[in-house]
Image 1: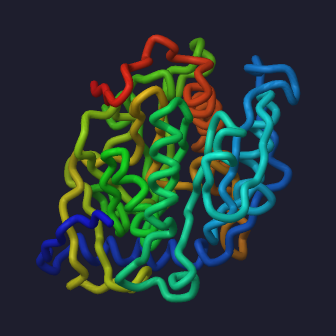
Image 2 (image 1 turned 180 degrees about the horizontal axis):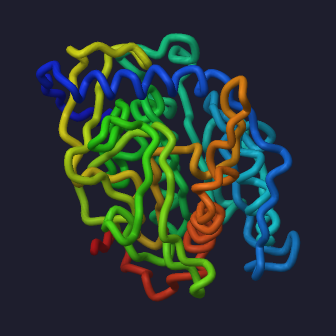
Length: 328
């Protein structure tokens, strides 16, 4: 598991704002439900209904997000684009993965961390599964890996590292100490790529909102999709959602919240935050969070663009020789 080394930040105005932001976020996190009424338009579906490639959703690793649960809005949107969604229970095997074009893993957890969100965080995947998934992608499969704030980044760390992605096990914040913040193309925190550009101007993503995630680095060149700005921070607590002015932290300038890469003959997209890819109602006031939020109008485009790129609908010229990872 790859975890970034912390340094301590001196107490002052930043920790106060940061702690307040996290205290506000915690009640909403504890009360999340999928928005079953959310149904954005899909003007130009990639495939006729039920005729597209199979998208396999991991539900075998104590996932916080499943097809029938918090990721139901994601699943409905992708299905309306013509893809065929199927759940997968149990360990990954090559036979199971060979039945699909795209594998989606969102917020997997090891059994020991279901109730105990404190360090050390165990891998959600055993070494054999990591080898199976890496080999399947190298041979032409595609992976959408979503790993949120602690403990989810730690739980997916071993799998991500097989693709040169070094997840953190923390909480990302912008320069104002906010865990919910915007990333915009015009400010350089959202970069050009088929995942953000789509097939036509109407599919272009110009902004996204992050709802408390983690940021990561890479050991290999990748295509940046979403990047943390100047003055941003990554809090690295010993226990999830327990913070003080002495909580270890590192500067997160230039760390990533979204990346795409070619691995052998396959493709990988990694996001460090999950809520932006679905539609939820958070807290007792059932506040829209994710694709259904007023400030997140481009999020459905991001979801469809990512799955289409992974399935080879867009970016066909991005193909790389076996074993290569191309950066930008």
